[in-house]
Length: 243
Ligand code: SME
Image (tube, rainbow, N blue to C red; front, side):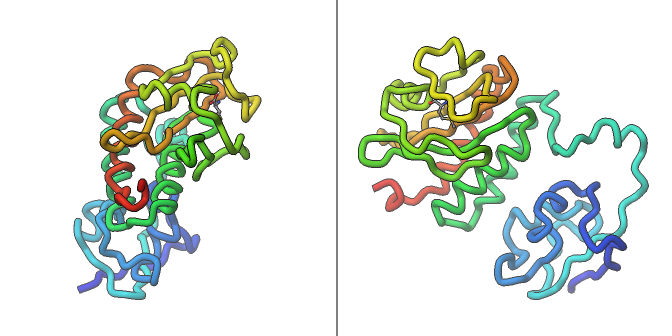
């Protein structure tokens, strides 16, 4: 049985339900051809306790979210548009990994999953100006789905931070890009960077690259958290996508 709620007066999704607010086309309308309302991610993003954890909307049903409670002054000052503040870095990365698993769950399209992974990371992590993929094609790294300014298309293995992380097959944190010999500046605003290699079995698939306009933005906890997110993405990759 589908529960129905009155439309939010603004006609949209209240910002107090950030996951739905960030993905209104997915969070507010359930049962369209794009979103059947049955994926784990869809269930996860419904405000808990109001609709029942696993309430499933009928096909074509609009999931109307009731008006939010008034915002407290505290909430106004602490909620800055991100769902995670990373004060509990390991915990927030764990939640983000769960969120990513739900987002990618059931979808096998490589580009779609890479695009949503980049978008989720860019949306969730503070102080980023670029987040996305380079994939290994014919012996060089070629830019894949990303968020941020247009980027260098091709990077040779061994060149830049991306090419170095790919060849050395290890996560590289660059606290100051100007101090990294051979750093490739795609966006002049970048001050620090982290690159995680994507490896399936013995095969190098590419790299996940994040840039920040802030010096020393990334630490070892970010590296571990991003490696975890990368492994969630890699679980969605089919063998034929890396052949
Ligand atoms: N800075 C990277 C190039 C990619 S951009 O940052 C998006 C590098 O040195 O490999």
